[in-house]
Amino acid sequence: MAESPTTAKTAKKKKAKRSVPTGQLHVSATFNNTIITFTDPQGGALAASSAGACGFRGSKKGTAYAAQVAAEKAGNAVKQTYGLSKVDVYIKGVGLGRDAAMRAMQGLGIQVETIKDVTGVPHGGVRPRKARRI
Image (cartoon, rainbow, N blue to C red; front, side):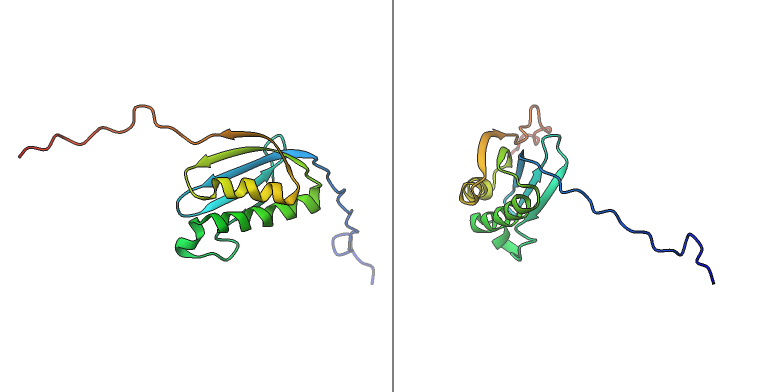
């Protein structure tokens, strides 16, 4: 019995290993969690991790140590897979993980080129509460 073209197994081509020597590190540090994302220069995600994904739960997710562990996890993944050696850092938020993620990068041997704070700042804001009358 002859196999039809749809049932025949097709050989998968092996994807060429992509090399990304320089990229971006996006750190979103809130009071409750820290999210680390490595991207290529155009903004396409390469690897990501968060304090919650590293096993921290509850209030421990917002700590500097949790941010450090998350940054090391994502940093190791992107360094081995893509050979990333230099990053531009974009930090958003006011949490404890801001500095810890940066220190973790220097511990991994990933060179930090620039640091930019992209925290959103309100201009105008919401309408204030009415005046209190006693």
